[in-house]
Length: 177
Image 1 (spheres, rainbow, N blue to C red):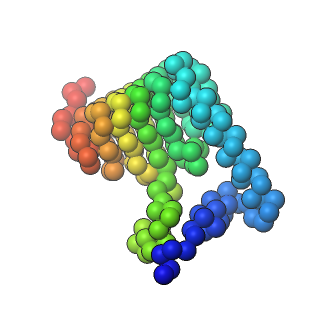
Image 2: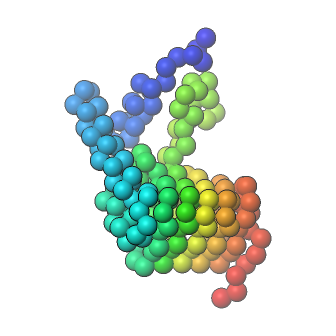
């Protein structure tokens, strides 16, 4: 019956360890940190103003270059925003999602087996276009001036100057430059 064990304390400890917090005071600090991050994310998420969304995401710790455009409803990792880097001239379409972590948080069997928490940097290089509904998974780099088609799920690196489509996303064309 190990599968029915509450995994919340394990998840909380993993996050606290990552941020270097411990004890009750650390638990309070992490809750305040996430409340602030969630408020900033909520303001950014539904804003029709790209510059405001970018400003709120930067305040959360997301590294964002110049001349980027974020459509409304962009979700950038809520727990590890500092692990996401978006370079200059990047466009993020509505309902696109970028995750710097994966975690089978409620399934102890998977969590303690072959699928532990994974935390890994995401890099979106200059000029990339992430179309609406695309999902970028932890550890992925999107190449310079590459295009990710709508609703694609990117699970591996996409080279510079490429168009990628599908689930999982695969390169279908090189862009001449």
